[in-house]
Amino acid sequence: MLNQDEIDYLSKIPIGKKISIYPFDSKVTKVVEDLTQSINNVFPDLKVKHMGASALEISGQNDIDIYAFSDPSDFKKYLLGLINLFGKPQHKHETFIEWKFTKDNFDIEFYLTAKDSGTMKRQIAVFEILKNNNDLLKEYEKLKESMNEKSFREYQEKKYEFYHRILDNKTKAILFDLVGVLVFKKDNYIATSVDEINAQNIENLFNHIDDQRLIKDIKEKLNLNDDEIKKAIPYIPSKFEKFDKLWKILPGLKKQYKLAIVNNGNSIASKYWKEKFDFSIFDLFVNSARVRLRKPDPKIYLLTCEKLSVKPEECLFMDDSLENIESAKKLGIKTIWWNKEENKEKLLLELKKLIE
Image (cartoon, helix red, strand yellow):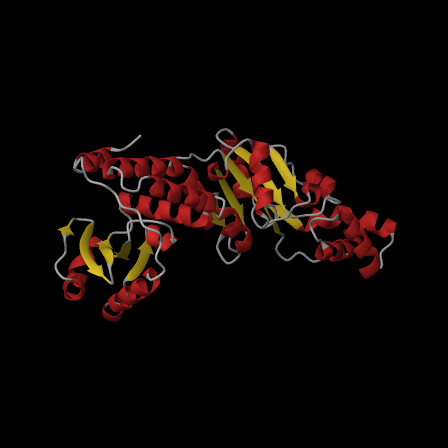
């Protein structure tokens, strides 16, 4: 459903106006580099972002959309310098100032804009989703191409509907990494007994996908026999403890979302993980060794979504590996990177803000 601002904008478009769509032109790159450099030569502190079809390298209107982000209270500081670069602005608004001009046969739209306005947040969100989801990007390009030489009003309406569809997908499932999100190594943990030391050495050999190969490696590389392996395995989870503040909110999350763990790990110790940590609150536990897939392979996320009966864009995923996060993000999954350098409480707060 379109909002009132979108309806008002559509009503102002002349009925007979047509839209022309052109293939992506690689010359865009040089034009954007030159414009960005010219801005930063005058204002090194301005953050400049290229968005729109040309930034996504898909068919479009042969135009270039460039944004420079600033608090509106600082617009005056930049205005004169930008007028010297681009001439008199086309429009002035309390949250943005717009310039329109032509450079090297491209129509340029440049905005000095507040980054935190509702409109800008939506534009950035749409751009980031399309940039990281190839399927949605292809669908968006086909939409554009299908409207070539047709009604501009109808084209804009279809774009709005597309944006709403990809933005208004409510989160239905939360996917958790195990170690580094739900559980962490105990502070000052030191393996002391023979079995604990063996358990730690076994963990270091984990390949997360092949239990038989792991047993073979344990015997060959650690020189352990079957009895020593059997005694060591129960100690593998013993050095970990729950991040209690996160576990305490799980019952509340369970009332609103499907919950799943997506874990890279061999299954030989799964019995002891489940004995130490009660995972019954989770709807699904995906173990890489059991499904023969491991993060960051996108297939493990798609399998998880299939088992939960949700779409990737309806999921939120948390992991301490940036590689795993980037892989999930490309599927349209919302993500929070649990960067090891960040404070856990800060990341928990970020989760709470996303699901409020």
